[in-house]
Image 1 (cartoon, rainbow, N blue to C red):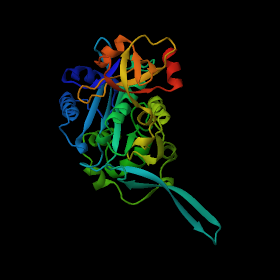
Image 2 (image 1 turned 135 degrees about the vertical axis):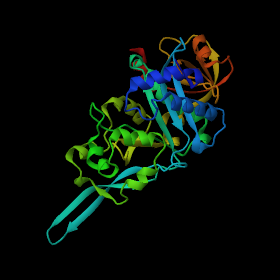
Image 3 (image 1 turned 30 degrees about the vertical axis):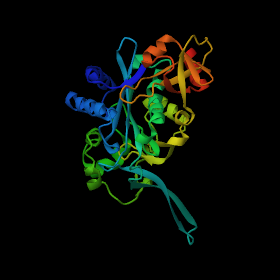
Image 4 (image 1 turned 180 degrees about the vertical axis):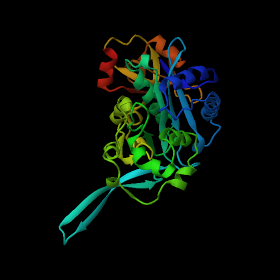
Length: 344
């Protein structure tokens, strides 16, 4: 398996992935024309032809038969072209000394505090490929890419995770709050936002702080809670140092997790090494390896042996990376827990 930049010929496979993902996957449009536009824009991004505010790094996961089985993405910066809204969950304390009552009420504050930060998004892996370390490769490859090209990204990475919804895609948070101001279904509002049309949020969403005690119990219960289907993806990122610091999506109340670039494990611990070809033993740890290229980026995960300033891999791994012995790579070992999963 390799992670590489998207190509124009990947469009049919991407459409198949979007259709399998279903209506909750709004960050990739279920429209061939719009998806083709995003692919073309991603190609311009990898070619260094767009500014950070417009950068969209769209990756695919490809097997050795050149079949695309997954997709993930990075944006250079959010909120610099269109407003980027979140709720910050704070606390309002009201008290009456005369009555001996004090109330601590969770409160939602509309904000743009993530403006200018880079976002991890559009992660989806075909269901029949969710085994071994494929999911971690697809997700963590983006972090190794960031480690190599930190100048292209903000000081912080964020990920806006899908919130709780039922099997029909209905959100209890939306039904209790957003529906009253937008007068539309949750899926329609989420779709408009995914199109980049966010001005309606500023026009219709109340600017005043909102007390969560005025929401239904069902809505209060899902604030900051991820959808059950994305919990494995969340675990991968929390292992890397991402944390939920009180920011949530304004539509479904899903958690917005964040991490400073310098504190992310893959970014912090990755190293520049030289590639060597050999035969790593059966107990060799699995490494995440990047060929250090931008437009022709290739990233894979494979058993490897560290020898001074070289990393010894087998010939197939070197072929996947399109590298020769002596070429420079960026690499980082996967944590022990991930190695055990690969060996299982």
